[in-house]
Length: 422
Ligand code: IPM
Ligand code: MN
Image 1: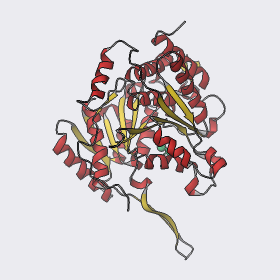
Image 2: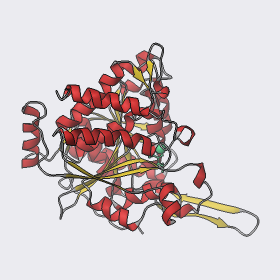
Image 3: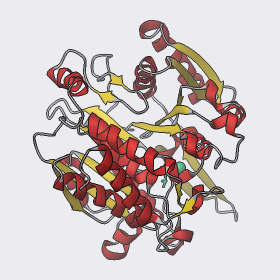
Image 4: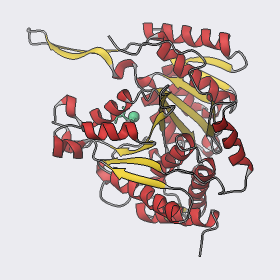
């Protein structure tokens, strides 16, 4: 039995206001939201945080530490120039943590994660740990963080910068200007359902079982996030499942349809079978606005969406929980979608953009620093517009750069945009 099977009423969820590059996350009619609106009205960069923001950095394995170093560069710049007040602490997670402590994440790090204002996560895993016991494999650290912090809503925006439209494996006209969100349920479904086991049948055969399980409240709360996001964008939700073969798909369809009828009739809702949605994503992705998926379909569809943007190295993500009734805080973990890429680790060629854009999402969703988030996003776009490219997004006539050069260029553009150049 899973715990926490609470019904979430429409009032327990804080509505979301999101536009791809000028988003805020707030509860209407609270002072937080008023100050958020105020922040939008006052001149650029007056939006300073008043207290120290506590960030937990979990660089992890493979290219994780390299791309995280570029976020640390930005944090240092912002601290020095009064663009933010950040206090950072780093900890091990994944394979590196296993090597030292025999587990993928320690109790101490879990406690720090719960106390942080936001968690920045690099990547975990690699061939070195292929043989480690399943329960302590590098990925187990990430999954524990997601589950124990209740990070059920995983927002993966896929935006194709005009400068990168030629780096996609699809034709320019198919991806140019793309701006969609894959909204993935992150704490349920096949990833966590029990039983999850390999049984020895005693006749030379084994049986592997993974369990796909969803309760009404889990479907409803992720769908609600989808409708709220859509309302502030192009007002369209595409709900995906496989109701033609899966009972969880039948319930998913029913719950989303009911919620839509009850609370969001103004939003355009369509349903697509998850396999058909994969096909439509590569055929004509601009038909979508917000795609709501379960944990496993969301994992796959977001990798597909990432490639539409030019490279897996471009896609950031935010994983958010419910607001804690006592502390009034919402946990948020921010990570690039790309993973640890062991083949290029240590070479200084990884694209840091997804990690930096994940930091921008942390500024936006966990720290209420909308202006700073906009600036970081604009700095990324400006570095790309100057023709700088890491190998994964290389194109003819562009200037090939490594991880650190791209990070320096983004920091330089941030300085210019913030009027902090000497
Ligand atoms: C992702 C990753 C993870 C997942 C792995 C590393 C456990 O692929 O965030 O998409 O499957 O969720
Ligand atoms: Mn994945």
